[in-house]
Amino acid sequence: MPTYEYYCEKCEQTFEVFQSMKDRKLKKCQDKNCGGVVERLLGTGAGVIFKGSGFYETDYRSDSYKAGAKADADKKKSSSDSENKKPKAKKNKKKDT
Image (cartoon, rainbow, N blue to C red; front, side):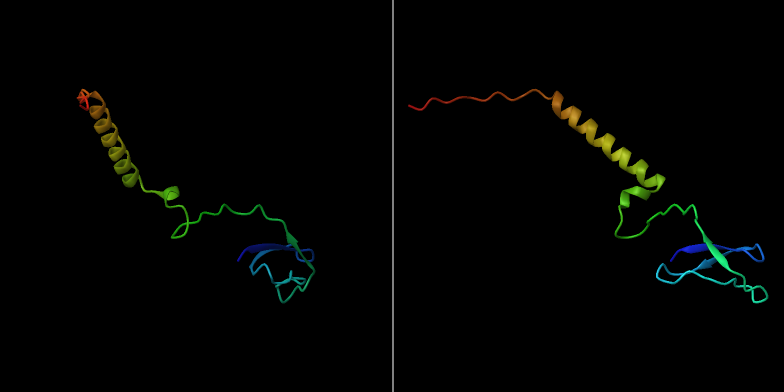
């Protein structure tokens, strides 16, 4: 649920209200002594970060995990390089008689 910012025209106070998007806009100031007309302000919004199951796990990996993954990648690369340097075995062709 978002937090909306309101401005009271009578008491000139700005306040925030945590309410559902389905809720109606406030029309009166929350200050019981004021009761003035309020206007909902446009906010800049907030950056949203989704963490937890159901989102891309690779987006928020720890530094230790990244270091381990890099070591594994380097290990695989070095083993594939050593395989490429081995001489190829000759194939014997047999004639069918």
